Each structure stands twice: as structure tokens, then as C-alpha cells.
Image (tube, rainbow, N blue to C red):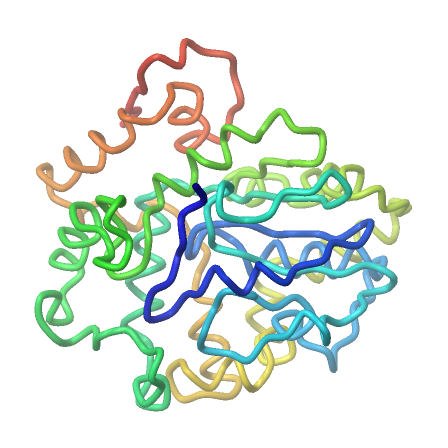
Length: 313
């Protein structure tokens, strides 16, 4: 039986009314693993490097299950002949159709956590007035401390999701990655790693365009890639995210949008996480299939014995 993801912030039942159309695109990730980046990439590719600046990608490709913002399948926008949504749900919760393209973006969990720490700690009073808001970052048990947050995140699940053992107060990164990893050989599923996007953005975008069957020439591809650099997205943060999405971070507006599009840098967990915390993370990674654990940490897809995982320091 399919699990229900119904929490203070999520309602997976929003997917019950989904009627797929040929060419639909679903961008799937765990929190802070590159979902907005991938939305911008697909958006730019669909418009051959000239995405509209007055139509924020978060409004053009919304997240159905997220309670914080209004959503209706009936008003899902057309994006140059295609439709796109994003989701944070595991693969076995999202409806799967052969005529829909699914792109999963993965990222080293330690880097995702550090970005998540900034994400939560930057929420403002407008956000906390919402009935769907999380607890305050400054309240116990986190009390505004990154280390305390990691201890809760790595060892405790959301109480609304009793089958999960990590991810508090959101949901499990490790269940997310493993569920989509088992779908990697489907012809309409593409696995993309945050690290590879950073190392070769244009090359990865060419791969994504091919997967989505977007015919784009090299000039337009380069133009699209220029629109998807972190520098460009941060400089134009408000036009990327939109006012409605940006108002829940920092000062709202452009400043709030720039708070959301933070740094995109990896390795910030070094000299932050203790040896004990690293050991807890390593144990979670080791419980994944070996090939999945390797991809999560390196971005490399290699055939391996999947009877057990492995942790690479």
C-alpha cells in the first residue's frame, strides 16, 4: 500500500488528481539538493535560452504537495508546450507514468544539510504566521544551533511519518534517494548529481536536453547555461523565484530571494560536524545499496555489489 506523506507542510494526496499529459516533466529532489536549480535549467532549455523574466519558475513549475502555497492541477501553466512540477516525495509516493519524464537530483547529504540549516534559520515572521509553518529554528530542541539541528535531523524522523528514522522536522533524505535510485534504469528517469552540475553545467544541460527530447543548438545551449549559473540566478533571484515565494525568507523581495539562493557551495560541513556526527551520517549511507551510496557521495554511476553500502570520507 502506498504511504501517505501528510505532515504540517506536506500533503501527498494533492497528487491523487494528477492526470498526465505527454511530455510532462517532474523534477524530484530532497530538500536543498538542487530542485530550484533544475527547474531553472529545464525552464531555460524549454525556451532555448530565453526564459520569460516576468514568469518566475517557481510559479511556472510549482510543488503540488507543499501546503504553504496554493496549487491546482487545473491551472498548471503551459511552458512552451510542456508542463513541469517539482516534488520532494519518494518515488513510490509519486504517480509513475510512461509518458512523463522524471528527473531526480541528488546531493551529498552533508551538503544538503548545511544548505537546509541556512534555509530553515533564514525563515522570517511572515512564514511563521502560516498554519503550515515549521517550529521556530530558535526554539528547542535546535535552539538556533547547527550541531543540535544535525543531531535531530540525522537520528529522528518526522512524527507524522513513523516509518522514517531521519530527516526531522522535514522528511528522510535517505529514503528519498534510495526510492529514486531503484527507478534509475527506467527509460523515462534521469539521475543528475549536484556535483556534476557544478563541474560541467553546460555538459549536464546537454544531457538533460537530450533526455527531454529538446532540440537545441550549441549557441542556444550556451545561452541557456548562462541563465543557470548560480551567479546569474542570485543576481536575478526575485525574477527566478517570484515575490510570493520569496516573501518567507529574510527581508522578503530581492533580498529574501537571494537568501534562498544562498551559495551552492559544497564542503561547508567540514569543521562543523563532529567525528561522532560524521559516524552517524556514515552509518546512514552504509545502509544504502552500495552503488547508490557511491553515487550519492561522488556523482559516479558504477555497477557494484548492492548487498551493502560503503562510506567514502
